[in-house]
Image (tube, rainbow, N blue to C red):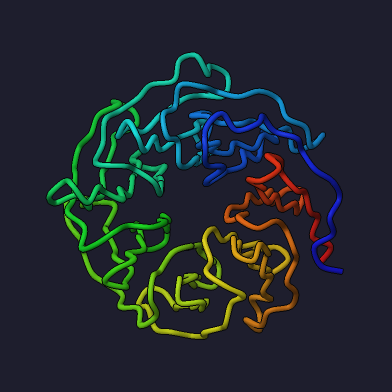
Length: 308
């Protein structure tokens, strides 16, 4: 029962210091895209065979990947060059870049309007540095850059409320941007734990899961943002993913290097799985119930299967 380790995927060695960042799975194509920040590239993994396929280069400081299965597109946040990338898996060479705010990181996508939100972490040397950029994906243009109240973290789009939810590290809160009017912050959900970081959505049960630097996992009821539950974590979290079929939530914790696994029906932690120190990012393949933990010291992905 639980997460079973089934092997590793060897990935290219780091060219510079650093490691991996956010990743996403293209369900229909069984492809995983992970930001290999140290190599300014996306590494591509075949999820059927659990093998490295190739890398997509030229993405300076790439910090994240997001997939739209509906439109068969992949998006990247290229932090060092202040741009987002857009490409089809059938035409990687046709990757287009759109300039956005300062140091984009988190990504969320509204497929109906074909709008991408990039949450920009900013630069301390740049005034008014924290923003959310809205990109018209069809036209490949920036249509809005909204001031944010603080350093952004991860973001999700919820179709039912037709809104983007964005974590703000300080002041600790989740801000809401209405997708039909992405020019301003519509409202704010206050968080009383330091450093909202990882974020994911349980669309069926109308819940937001927010993992905070203060070592707590918070579950909020949508749309009002009422707190339903709070649980302790093994350390400072980063990426989280929700498994809606098996009712599990996976939380990556780089120090000491573990995955905390929660039963989302009870919101109790059911296991803590060792990974590697510094392994702060995950990917989740819902078609195969696989979890990939990216190991920066050994430049590979540890592969786990969830047996329920």
